[in-house]
Length: 205
Image (tube, rainbow, N blue to C red; front, side, top):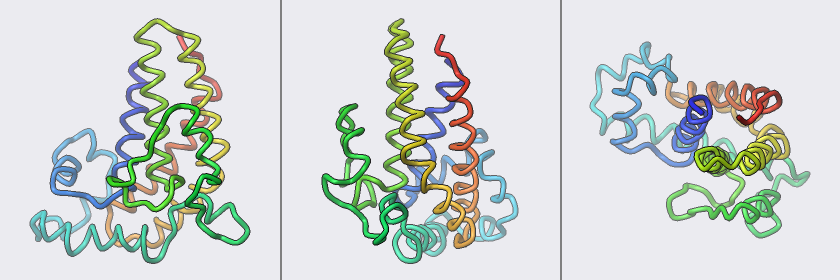
């Protein structure tokens, strides 16, 4: 159960960082929570961190970098990578829609910096949603339901995230100008690969 909760927390963190600009509270959490900061090892070498306050870090560096990797130079949507015409599918024909509906997952487009449900941050949030459902099933003693949610996690990883996210994340590592987004991309790439291995061998108990 402890490992499953840790997986849920990591998916939630990655989704938050890649889905929308950081705010002051989120930046404070990254900088001051030792467990979270451990995921961002490059921060210790970022000299600007010692020279600027949070407001300046956000407005002049981090949010500019987010726009660079999410809105201007890179495209964080599955259909851009999987469609031959590289068009983003914003309607009901999007390949993730059926699975979202199956598990009653609703994308909050007001909160997300996304125009389509196959944004990497939304897909990571859906993985968090599925892991939380697994945890609830385990807490209720429903092993069959827990297995069902775990199978869904592996299926979604292989049908969706693993088919395109590594390409996007590698590009983020090259394009990012701040350590938070460089480290987030590296962590996400390593984590989804490792989590797929975990799900391939895991037995719900």
